[in-house]
Each structure stands twice: as C-alpha cells, then as structure tokens.
Amino acid sequence: MHVLVVHDYGPLGKVLLERLRATHLHVSPLLVSDPSNADLDALENWIPEDTDLIVNALWMADPEVAEKDPEGAHMAAFSLPLAMAEFARDRGMALLQLSSCYVFDGRKQSGYITSNPGQPVNELGNWQWECEQALRTLLPRHIILRTGWSLARFIRKVQASTAAGEVLSLPGRCRGQPVAVRDLARVIEAVVLQLDCGAEVWGTYQYAGAEEINLYELGLAIAGLPGIPEGIRVVDEVPEWGHLEPVNTTLICTKIRNTFGIKQMPWRSGLVDELAMLKKNNGREVESEPAGS
View 1 (cartoon, one colour):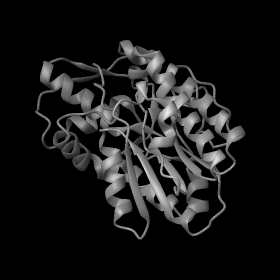
View 2 (tube, rainbow, N blue to C red):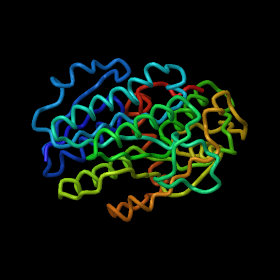
View 3 (cartoon, rainbow, N blue to C red):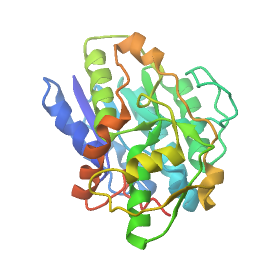
C-alpha cells in the first residue's frame, strides 16, 4: 500500500514518517509548510497517482490559533481536507483525517462517544465538525480520528510563563485527556497497518491518553517535570482564552480499542519525552504556532 503523509513542520509528521518508514509500507511525505495558505489547485501535482491512502497529519488542536486567524483555520481545517477528500474520491483513494475534542460543547456530564453530534463553541471545533460532516457525505472510505488535548500545547504554556516569570492561570473547571505526539503517531500507524490488511473499518474514532484530568492539575503535573525551572506558579483561574475551552472534552475510546485493538496509553508516561521533543524542535508548537499565554 502506498501511503502519502501530509504534514507540516511540527513534530507529528516527523515522528509518524519515521514509524511508517520502519514498516513494509511504501511511504511518501508531502510537506505543506503553510496549510492556511495552501494552493488547492495544485493537489494533482502534489499527490502521486498510485497513492492508496492519504494520511492528513496536519494536527490542529489549539483553538487559540484558530480564533486569531479564522480564515486560516477555515482553510487548514476545512477547505484543504475537503479538497483532498474530493481528489481521493475521484481516484479511488482513502483518507485518514484528524479532528479533535473541540467539536463538542462540553455540556455533557459524562464522556463523549463517537456518535455524539458535534456542537462546537469555537472556530477550530466549528470547522472540524463541518469537515467531519462533509467527509462522511463525500468519501465513504475515510477514517476520522478525533483526539484529546495536545499535551505539547500546555507544556508550551508552562514554558512561556516560566520564561516571562508570570503566574500561569489554568481553569480547573475544564476536564479532558491530553495526547502526546509519539502516542498519537503510534495510534495512526496501527490504524494504517490494519487498513493495509484490507480491513473495511471506515468511520469515526476517538483517541486520547488514559486518565482524565483538569487543566489546572495538568499544569501542576507539567510544572513538576525535570527541566522545568522551580518556582513557577500555577493558579486555578480562568485565563483570557478560557472561554474557548469546553468544560468537558473527555473522549470515550472503546470503539478504537474494539475495532483496532488500540489501547489507551497513560499520557503521564509521555511527559518527559514530549518536553524533550519540544526543546529539540526549537520550542515549536505542534501546529508551528505559538501557544499564547
């Protein structure tokens, strides 16, 4: 199977390509350096004719970035994936598309299952939900993979507050599950390998790290890491960007386990590695954008 991995300069594309290249699969990279300004008319030149599966590894998991650039978010989270889906449909290809927990409004008392309808409360979730709905209509052979919070995003917030000597406000009212980059790459690889075996398992799945936590407690966990300077103050308060965070983004991940045998890994076990990866990437956020304070 020929797999095309669409990626940006963030670490997910790099890690995923390394993992897939270690398999028997034929893997090609497609670097989209600026997804918010991609040339949709150039897809025919970008995507090899013999591609079987397009993996869109442009992971958008920061609602602050989308709020600051709504047009860019529309392009990267909706227009570009939709153009790839249309291209795939016309040429008999399949598409794996990332989405996120931000398609939900957080009002549900328990965790969200894959069949719960999206009711987004921010720009990122809005375009991801629109993209999901369009994909289901347009391309039967698709995998939509919703993820929990980007662990890297909140590590960057801790780092930024430490560098500025500022108090970091994180809302304890907001609960969810982070996902580390290497863990997400592991999950995508496992899905791709089973698709290569001919599994007809198209549809929507969810993955997040094991253990639900609130953002304040997540901040404390990150602040205690080796390599994070001592003395950082994390407080349980709602920051300026707090209105973008649903109160509950907990994802139930039983469907991906039952279908693909993919178990949730503890996100805590990836904390040190995620911090080291961000330092190695010169502090770049997963989406190649600053996380904001």
